[in-house]
Amino acid sequence: MFLSYKNSIFTAGIASLLSLGNWMLASPSYAITLDLTTWDKIGDVQLITSDQAQASSGTIDTVFTSGGNGSLEDFLGIDAGSLNSLAPESLFGATQGSAIKTLLTNVQVGDTFSFNWNLQPGSDSVDKAFVTINNQIFSLDGDPLFNYSFLAAGNYIVGIGIVDIDDAAGESQLIVRTAKLQAVPEPLTILGVFTGISCGLVMRFRFSKK
Image 1 (cartoon, rainbow, N blue to C red):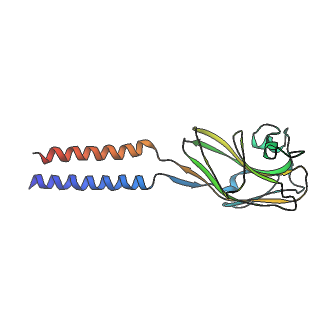
Image 2 (image 1 turned 180 degrees about the vertical axis):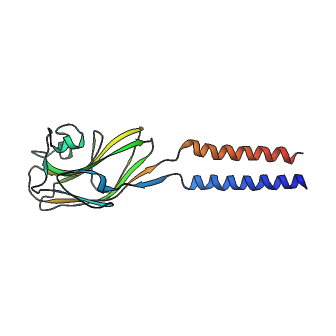
Image 3 (image 1 turned 90 degrees about the vertical axis):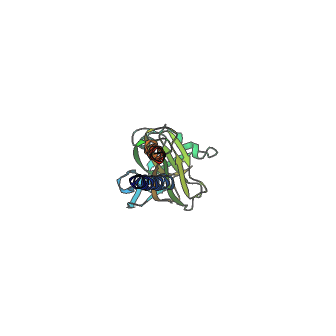
């Protein structure tokens, strides 16, 4: 009877560990919703709620590009004139705009940054929306969900903005919603679960032979 009692305990323990392992595998990551009202801003920006921000181009409150103190590139920490890459075929490139930025710290390999966006062009349909991640620039085109997976651990300056192309007229608006950082699980956590399962199976086998 005592042996049977031990077997029951180990069986229950193994079942609990397996359930925990299944839960870990079914929930491999968790998302942190980023508060947009805490982001720095420059130009014509309205931080409407923690979940939504609006940046505009073509207004008197936007700031100039091309680099230097107070420029959009200086604010975002990117190379002077690099926003011209958003419209390489244009005559004058990016002229002025608005943006928000934040610093993501302790990012791990495989973490994912994402947000929903909507560009509402004014009379000037060539205005461009973009994302900067450290010194990389990504044009916002097509898919209304931006998704970026980090390939190296570290700290990242992330910016989201909009610029006028070729001129300083024609107000356009970029709406940003639901910015998130999706973190990957810690490998040791999963390893610990399976180590516990393995130990339970070994102990159950040893007691079953007695």
